[in-house]
Image 1 (cartoon, one colour):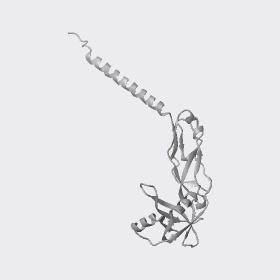
Image 2: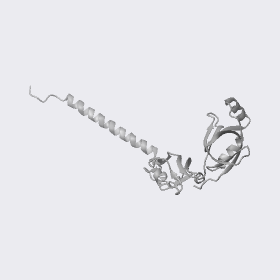
Image 3: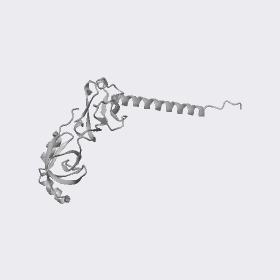
Image 4: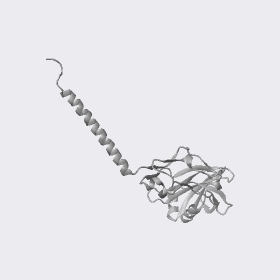
Length: 224
């Protein structure tokens, strides 16, 4: 999980405007955005859609943002708002940071070695429950992703956050008991066991009912 590298992003400042102006921007291939924090006033900007996608795809936790050619400022992605239907970016929020102060960031967790896990080879189902984690570190130390080898998992195992390892300069923010993945028995086997259990229970209930009915039908053993 290597630390990310800083990538430069040049944008053009713009005056804050309404939704109609924002739609016009997007139709022309530009994305409206805002940068704030760091004890400075918020600044609205516009950026080419393709440029933004390229930077976010290749950037690390920190982006060196330059507005109208000014000296770059380290920022991190705070929120990327997408269209609910087509998934295109409609707005981007950036947050100014100091490189000497820790920040919290969301990082993807990648599980490796699934096919080699004994439980998977036996037909078990590996479910990746938690796919993102929150970590805290200096901006340039935020890892690109967190990888964990699950090749040793067996049926019935549960992978918890406390089992994952990080470098000394990065720490988890989430609960150590957070479930990352589980390896459960084959679904057909589970369904068969549940069916047998239900059938056994039904037979038991029918037997008890028959016994009760037999007792009710039995003649009175007292003298006439």
